[in-house]
Amino acid sequence: MMDKQDVQITFKAGVTMKIIKNNTLGMTSMKKLFCVAPIGLAILSASLGTQAAVSFDDKVTVFGDFRLRGEDFNYNYKSDSDRARIRLRIGAKIQVNDDISVKFRLRNNASNNDSSHDTLGADNSADFGYDQAYVSYTGVENLKVSGGKIPANYFRTTELYLEDTQIPEGASATYKTGAFTLNAAHFIIDEERNGNTDLAWDHLQVVYAGENLTLGLGHIALGDDTSDRLGDFESSEMSTLTVKAKMGKASLSLDANVTNEDAATSYDSQGQALIAGVGYQIDSKLGANLSYWRVGQLGTLANGEFTQTDMHALENFEGAMAQLKYKLDPKVTLTPRLFYSETLDDSVAASVQDDGDIKSMMRYQINLDVKF
Image (cartoon, rainbow, N blue to C red):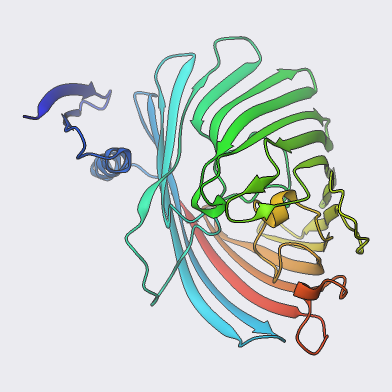
């Protein structure tokens, strides 16, 4: 027998939705439950003729974005490739009362922590599920506490410390006083990318935000230095420095870290990593950015387990990225990018070709992003 519970939700617009929630033991997964809500809200928003973020009685806001990507890869150590990709994300925020809110987001390729994109023409599975689902409490002045599957509350300008598609589970707290913010969290990383080991992630960060300068100092520690897939790894902790500065139309950014590696080796920039960038807003629609990347061997947590995947390697490389960002519309952006990376230290055997030459990659990419 199925236990049916009728729930009435009434909005200011005069529309009443009746949702029949079916609780069937062992048959209904949480992903299926989360898939129903945004679809219903999206249909309702279309019927009301609203645009952009849709608010019902100031309680529910629907948001989302769509990306179309084309890219081409040129390698000196394997066959070149090209591909077209898509990404769709849709979510909602429900303001339960003045102090409590619930937020969730769905996306394609939801079980893949390396990428939120699907490749057109490839054998993609119908993997559309939630990548965020959490509750937040703000009932204490200047404090926000969240629990669930949460984006990390760690100030950064790139994906050097943590890739954006890595959404951990756990609890986080953010406390603000004047120009200072304290970010703290305890997460459990229990994802396919990490084998079968539950890796605990703890971080603490102090952020100062001035008129034109934001500065963050923090520390991240994993609860262990091993996982089923990786075995033992040298770097399980890192200390970070993040800087973001504005000077008129120009901007500077820096993500830099050192790890606790204690390997009996001495590679170039071992245990260190940084991404430094400079940007310039040419006019109201067009901006440009150039960044330099240098990531040493053992320079990220857990052999690169949580870091970016834009370059040809996770560690032991240096490279650059050039980007233009053009607003075709307030909610439509065209972003061409050029990535180049090559091996930093050729004494690392895995980082060179069979003939001893370093590995390198040139990657051309263009994104069309639409927000709604």
